[in-house]
Figure (cartoon, protein in one colour):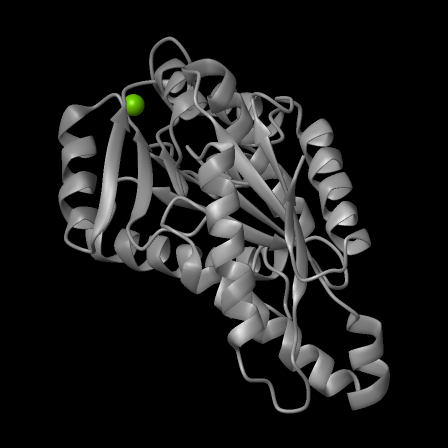
Length: 292
Ligand SMILES: [Mg+2]
């Protein structure tokens, strides 16, 4: 759930294939990608491996009904925040009141008007985009905040262990940032942070990501990248920032590179080693990259 997708992923949990298909057809017209599970158990196993932006669930289903599914999801930290809608033939006031007690976004009784379903789903997705933007991103630089960066990095590291891939991280800390702030003011300091974040983003490939983890400190994550390639990318970024023309002052950063699995597969270890390498870059005179 910690991501934005142009195309939204919808999970429909419904044991009646005709209803499921009707929902698929109307939502697909709105550029949404629809997956179908035919009961709560199937939905849970789907969500273990796949991402979903919203869940639309029937209540009366074999094996695991909608109430039990919702209860199970509310117990999972990763899954409880996915917006959830009940869509059910239980259409009495007491049914709807009971359904809403499961902290669902809305309750749509059957038979339903497909146009209203699409409108409600779209409104909920827009609302969550706004909330997620606030929760996941650093508001100044528009890159991931620390929490998101760590969540995404720990997920990537699981993949490193599972598929025997490599992954490099770059710890990048702006040089003399305090002096820049003191001398030219915080507005200029903010411009520097925003511009450097943009330069980083321009240099990253689609699968890479970057987060601001401290005042003037960024972590860049490069999946499927060994140490040599990580150093290459870090040095390219270093030159790019060094060459960029800021209004008042040149800006540089010092970078430390650590690579999984050789430097460790635990997130904390890897961040610590990248940090140590970055401090060596500072000690060696700044504006350079050091690998652990
Ligand atoms: Mg049913």
